[in-house]
Image (cartoon, rainbow, N blue to C red; front, side, top):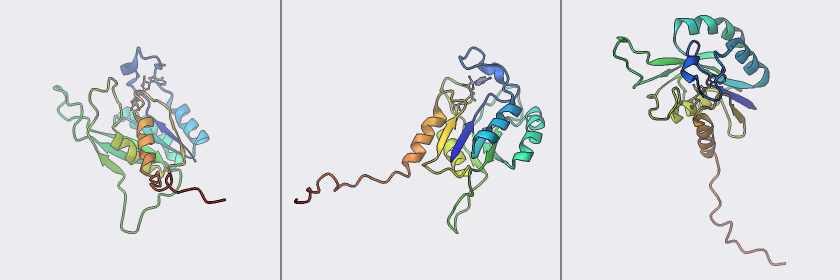
Length: 182
Ligand SMILES: C[S@@+](CC[C@H](N)C(=O)[O-])C[C@H]1O[C@@H](n2cnc3c(N)ncnc32)[C@H](O)[C@@H]1O
């Protein structure tokens, strides 16, 4: 299956990335969501919790059947003149397949994880958030994941590490087994 991880500049926030080589103004979210639907079996889209973001995205997301989930930030960018911090954001997920869990396990449609610091890029994603998102999209290690807005490359790195969890350990005896006699 093909999965996309879309972590674009949030609606109204493209200016934060002015000067970066991949900066191209505001992202057209209607085009982006159409692309996600057309080219991928499952996808993840990060967004802001601002009124404008909800107003633009809600009508675009509704026909896709994707689900609104949440990244809650224990530590966020607390600003002196903002009495109520912006400390959560929507993560919109269209699963590639039905998630399989054991009978006793239930997954949550939210994660609490603090923001990253000192990564040199606003909005770099923590590995734990990426790993949670991979579970929400019901990824499997043999899927392909396209990191559409790579920034620091944190998502691609998180994917590589997540897949490693499923790698079978090397057979310790394999190298020492003598070849069979002819
Ligand atoms: C939220 S950051 C991605 C962060 C990344 N997931 C990470 O963990 O490091 C958004 C990225 O999109 C880039 N960008 C800005 N404007 C863009 C545009 N119009 N089209 C494509 N990419 C853009 C930014 O330079 C930035 O690298």
